[in-house]
Length: 316
Length: 314
Ligand SMILES: Nc1ncnc2c1ncn2[C@@H]1O[C@H](COP(=O)(O)OP(=O)(O)OP(=O)(O)O)[C@@H](O)[C@H]1O
Ligand SMILES: [Mg+2]
Image (tube, rainbow over all chains, first blue to last red; front, side, top):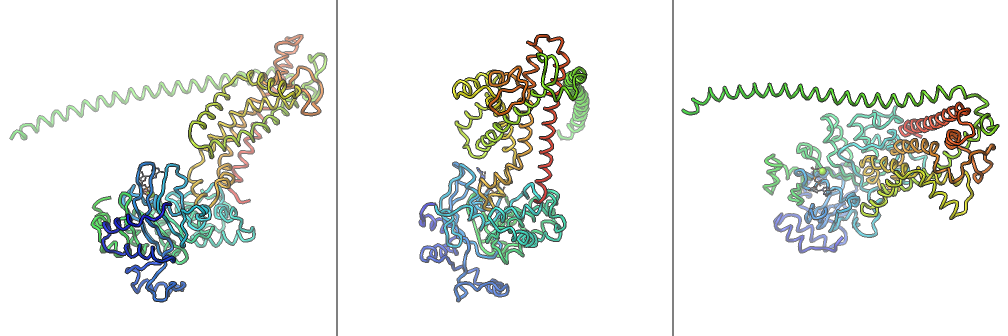
């Protein structure tokens, strides 16, 4: 909400990350209106090929050296009362990738995730400073409509939380309220359930209560419900922590599939899961962003010893 | 060295101790079991006593009132200074009173509850309102009767009538409706609110589409309690519109009316021949009981229907 505090940001970045990509990120940020970033890691061929193969629109700058970040967080601070829960976080989230947030319990992963669709607005003693840009738009600006934002940034919670309605009504809930014409609703429901890999299992029982589904199916129903409002970004807060391994695997496959069309951020306590499904990883510790980068780099060659300690299970 | 010496002794004391502990443990368990038995017996006794009282009262009313019930009793006007004839106007009056007072209290009460549960910020003002509602719920009904008369009749100049009585009765039952509705709203899981908000749905739409339907059956419970009170309370209608003898069906909400509760009260205390009308009194009580009971059944039916409906597509 505050204007930039770039000095702080620099000192923070310096002490924390030395000479890594953050400095250049900040530079770009200051100097250009378009938010784009140079990031060494992304220059790797692998990423580029992936883009071309999946037929996505090419990166906006033909050099291929610049890639768009759909979310740009800048000097974010958050307090619950006097508890400084997020400390000067700056990070860029690339489009159509899976970004994993890891870190020990209470380090602020959920809190940070919830800043991106402003779910923290619902908590009365929560105070936020700094900026989050989504598609170049500051979501904490006064003119931002929080409900429009949440339509664009969907969220799936730790505990599956379907409404006490039928399976069909759960998925139709969002579009109905957002005024989608009645004729289109059945199509959207089917499409969303297919998108959440649930259609085959429920197509003959759409009128049954959502509570008649298994835990894993309920979680996929919640994903379908989120897809039905057609978001660009989906936030997952430990979506598998209450599920058995098979359901977990299904959700993981689903997430991998979804990244073709959506940008995904997932909070997880499961290192293997982060390694399996994410392209990028950020490690948090007591409200600070310790390290971020490509998942392979974070897992195989962490720069910060705290990251290494966490990943190898020495603490957390 | 010393360790070796101590080992057997230590083992011994250890053994002794476990034995002692086990003994103490069995004694402890026995005592706990006894306590549990006593507690359960007391609870069972309480349930039996409550049920017995209920059955005796209802049984007594049914047995003594049943002979009075006839088609004529239910469909005729009272005659011969109310010592003969039926109680039709009182039946109709009570049903009208209950429905009208619910029409007054339910919408207002639920709106108040939604405000308190969903919108009012936690703080002093909210606590004061809640405490006031609690106090109102415990206020004697005769106070409501006097207040109704002072406000509606003397200040606003409304006639002694069905409307005035219903407004007063509405005030009487409102606190219970507010409390139960508020509890029901608070009991709706926070997850529903979060899920809905995360879809970009406004608070009001969330309340309308998810919270209120989920809280519905809890609210019905409050309405059931209120129905019984509205049908049974006498004091609030005593000064505001119920009359002893009005052998016609009310032609508008502005006419006075007869009610079963008041009818019963008068016949049991002030009628010209209390003994002669005993049977009519019990018959009246039975009819009152039956009305309250069937209204509750309707409410339960609505609740069940609604629960089913909320789980299926429309
Ligand atoms: N609603 C709240 N009110 C006050 N403090 C909160 C609230 N939610 C979280 N916190 C505090 O903020 C800090 C970060 O919590 P958060 O839930 O973001 O952690 P987390 O990394 O998601 O942990 P976990 O892995 O256990 O889910 C903690 O110190 C927590 O106590
Ligand atoms: Mg969390």
